[in-house]
Amino acid sequence: MAKHRPANASWSDDMWIMDFANDDDFHTSWLSNPTVKAPWYEVELDGDRSFNMIVITENKANISRYRLEYFKGGSWKPLLSGSDRGRVKIHRFDQVRGGKVRILIDQFEVPPGISEFGVYDERR
Image (cartoon, rainbow, N blue to C red; front, side, top):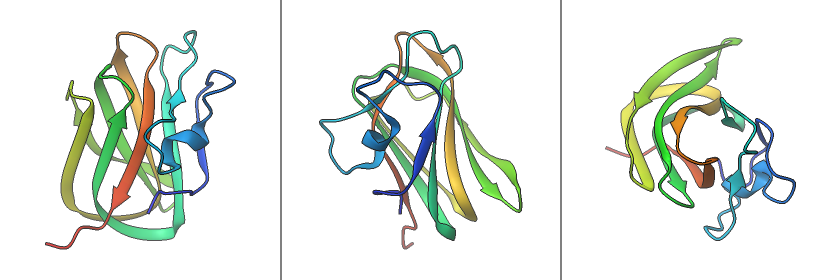
């Protein structure tokens, strides 16, 4: 659902813009600027959509603590907090409905980079 949708983020390096984190190309990434202390990335879905899985693929395993939120009814709602240190972070949860999804990055070693940010409504 996130592929090629409008995205927004905290300041990135000039070459590594937010559009690269949902372009369906694992060789490109959104890369946070080194001066940003609390980076974030969000993607706008095609209207309010139901979803139950988010997959974050980093260019290198770097993000160690983060929060996922979704936008519904005019405000951000908490979805989950994560501490997965792996390069690919897969999160399944009970189905929610919202128009945007974001990651708030709380802890990282070097400026974080997201290769792909996927949002899915997985059949169960």
